[in-house]
Length: 180
Image (tube, rainbow, N blue to C red; front, side, top):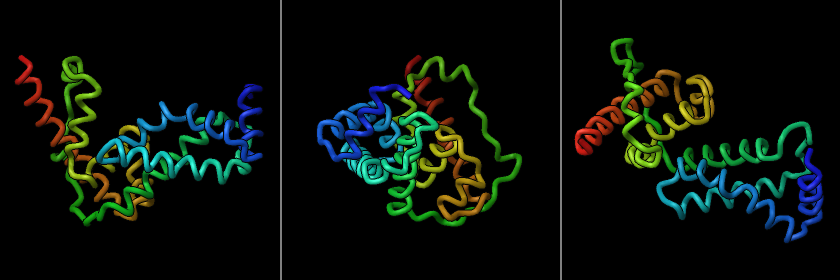
């Protein structure tokens, strides 16, 4: 492990405010992006990030130096985002999707659209649908894992992902039509 990170961790464990501020700043750029995927606005993303960092500082003594610190912090940030989503959203049971409901988006579409534009479109999805989409696409969770985390069925998770893809496909097609 990098010696500077070890020094930073030791300082944080001693409740040194400068070390805590440095760790906060070290994590901010990468982790606020994750928070923003699950928040409605920048203020809420900041609140989620602050809550996550509080958990990091409270649990830093549990960190084992086997892996990278930012990977450990990311796990806490992602779980804090999930906790926030569970408090803010009610997931209703949805029907399982059938094979004919499978939606695919042609890769060429993404050549004409920026990642920022895609994020804007994802934020316009219904909250529960956006959460499942982000968990599946960005965090790499399976439908079974999503179901366990959000206390929904696998079918409901699949339905939300399918709805997200349908909605995004429609919005992307409209966006591309406008640009040409």
